[in-house]
Length: 173
Image (tube, rainbow, N blue to C red; front, top):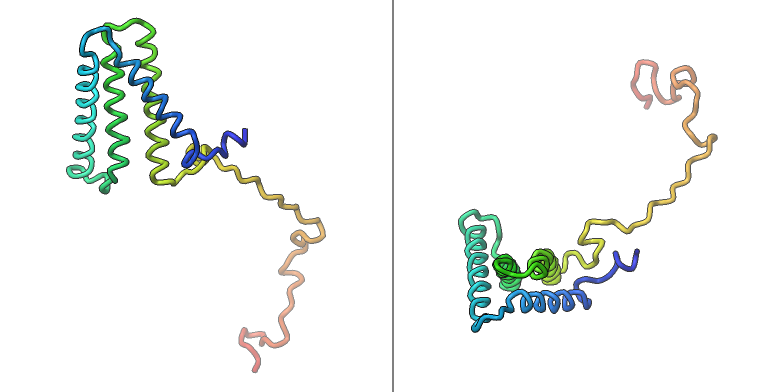
């Protein structure tokens, strides 16, 4: 289990594998037995990407939520929305297997986008860091022996005035 959690998702094969899988899913979902199917798929993907660009513009300039994301992050996000819109549109008048594949493709597109954006920033280099799981082992703290533990005597009974302090509270020079 530690191998899976410590797997490097920033530089590894995972990003490329997910990207190839997402591209294959896009081709399968957009494939139709209609002439010029690729044109309809391209327009659908472009419409979704334009919708994502509009959403990014609203978040960045109108609501002031994002602070100028780089073009790589914008490309990942617009590709995710475009692919998700294409998956949603491909469910219409499609066989059952294609609808199931379209529903399963959207989380794959989302994971690919998250890993792609994370690889750009490099903030979470492992699967455990991305999921917020700490792999640090707990500290081995020995309990103190009874002799070194807090003394059981009552302090006010055994306390004596230090020799350099006057009984009225001032220090003796």
